Image 1 (tube, rainbow, N blue to C red):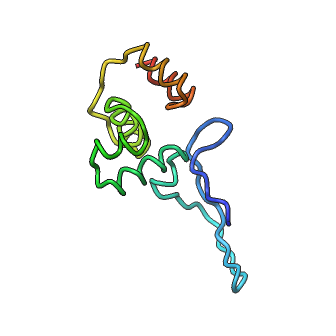
Image 2: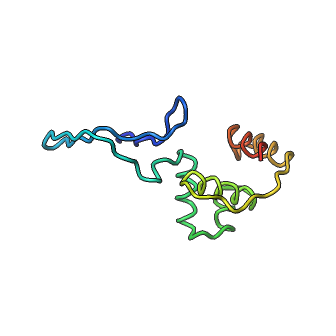
Image 3: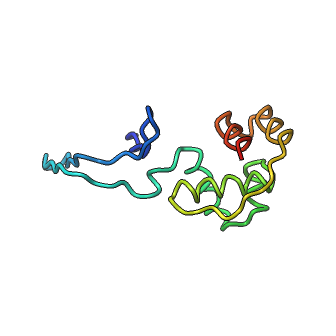
Length: 120
């Protein structure tokens, strides 16, 4: 299995650009400045959410069931993906601190997601 291209710098979280393309078949290399697709900029959790979202045709109830998360968490994850793709999020729910901490404790969200939710 080949490694997937990352879209964000692991040091400073800035957007990465591809500088070299290489063909293993004919050994041709092309150097320059190439942008990654928008979906390459998503982190693994965001990509998984998008996959589940598409597989369930955007049905929030099915997404909740498959991921074992609540409606507000589904909405927050969707808004997070929308922002990561470079669009303006429109949904801004009020954050229930106890709910965020309970989800963190249950492993439903990561520490980074909890921090982001609590900063809203």
